[in-house]
Length: 552
Image (cartoon, rainbow, N blue to C red; front, top):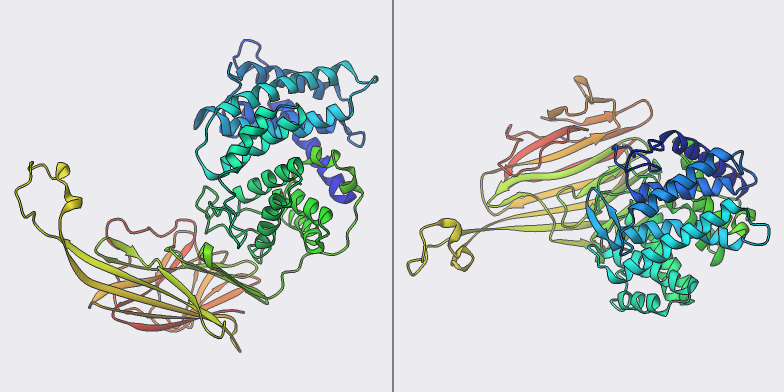
């Protein structure tokens, strides 16, 4: 992938030049040698990222910064800064969140290891004094860090695999069976990658690829195919999480990437490596497609130059072809999500989410919710999701169960409500409000899309609303109106078909209905997004409505 490699060199050079400008050079500052990140904070992890990128271009003969003195000086100062802020027990702080943190130390050591391995592989009689100094300082940071990681703990599921993979690799590199033994303790819990290929945090935009990287590292250290299989299974699933615009579907994530616009840039080396090592052509296709996405969206190449410098066979590899998403329907039942793609439109259904339905084409995204207040409930969140017998769609259901407290049979010990044992009170149950949503794939003269059939019942008359949030459209049109699709704008559709349009694409929704104007909801209701335009259809429970959505 020589073209990819050349672009990675160019973009790494740009990162290195920025790092040189951003380095803190005030010798009286406690942060001397560090770097301010985008939030104006200085910490070891950010410094290590700059160090490894600069180490790559400094040692790359194809780089215009090869053996550059300014780069060398920047690296030396940064390494001294990292050594100064490393705690006596080997751990680092992630200063906006975690202190004496084994997981964050693992991420730091993980980032540093490829640079250290490269320097070790190229150490010899002709090794320069600067390279030797860098290698020795990196080794001190890594070994000291591994000691701290071994005795530390974790917070989240992915932390386990970051810790285990780093300890496993350090155990192998430094012949430290105590590191390996500790890694095995983490691995003994079993890997949280289900049969769908999804990890516990469902973080398609971030932690999936971090978990994959850990699995690959553990596979390299142990030679056990099982660990590679987890990464391969997730990478296959991720092929179905790519949206028509090339971004990743992130609305199912339980972590900070939820709802964020993320492109699959950092999955590049995983698709390249697994595609090459296990002869999976669609993974190599995806590696090519990722660089097309990078060029199309004017993104920087992945910051993994050093990884490829350690695998020159991947640089020499040339593969023709790109990954073109086929029509598919995937029901990841254990993960509670369905993804379906047909022609130019992708739709997603999710169980247990208020934003239960997404429809996307190349440039327009629609997000659907059913909002309303019933006891403590504020929105439809499906409890069940089942596929139609003919495979053409899905049914989602929820029964919102009403209840009321009853008085204690015996006088409580206190009159303070907040100190009463209210959990032990008997309850009067009922009534219930039932919602059923059937979503069926549809293709007709109006385009490709879905029909959404909503039926509600159980009580009457409860004011509910269908919320349709739109991003990417420039205007909202009906038979007798056209208004800008401004971020934060709202509209109640009364009748007819509503069209979301821009210069390239169009998605229609309808027929509209409006039986009331109560769209805000009670306290605790999710507010309309200030980043998109929201269309409302309203009715009273019970109601039976079909909404047709088409991409033209």
